[in-house]
Each structure stands twice: as structure tokens, then as C-alpha cells.
Length: 129
Image 1 (cartoon, rainbow, N blue to C red):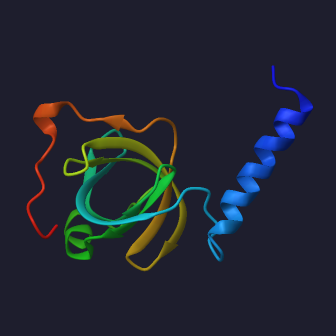
Image 2 (cartoon, rainbow, N blue to C red; image 1 turned 90 degrees about the vertical axis):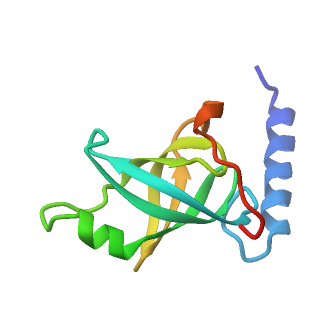
């Protein structure tokens, strides 16, 4: 069990880390990327492509492929607030919770542990992205 002083030290460290990223409201720094991912939902009955614009230990900013989205979605449902994403180029899959939406982009936090993909499902990245 942590002592009161250990809790205070942890809170101070977290506050320093958060304020070092002036203007940022996230706890983990984002790393720009351009990997392709697949979002699946409703028990993996539906899926759509996306691009991971940046990623951190706690979440990611995604951009939906609107052409793919329009062709694969009926008017009877929308992208839910909880879904699974698989990103072969980065070698992981994760359950996601939508934190914000803006046109074709959305910010998600990873709900639970980010799981590595088995080696055979990982894709090598080519030069230039």
C-alpha cells in the first residue's frame, strides 16, 4: 500500500509531466504516424478502414476513410463509441473508446491493454510510411 507522501509525489510527477506539454490535455505524448488500421464493431460483423494519424500509450487520433465508410455503412447504424482497432503496421490491436469526433477524425483512448499482434499478422513498413 502506498503512503500518503508517495501518493503526493506521484501526483506531483504527473502534474509536471502534464504541464510540460503546454496546451496539451493528454497524459501521454503523441507520436505522429500514418499507419492503416481496421476498425471492427458489433461483434466484428462490421468493419471500416482508418488511418492512425498519431498514437500514444493511452490512445490515438484516427481518420476514417469516408469512401469506405459510406460504402460499408447503412443508414441504420453509426460507428459506436466502443470498438476494436487492428493496426498491422504497428503490430497491435486494442479496444477503443471514442473521446471526441470531428468530421472524419476521432480521438480514442485505449480501453484496457494494448495487445501485440501475432508475428504472422504484422506487416513490415515500407520506406516513406
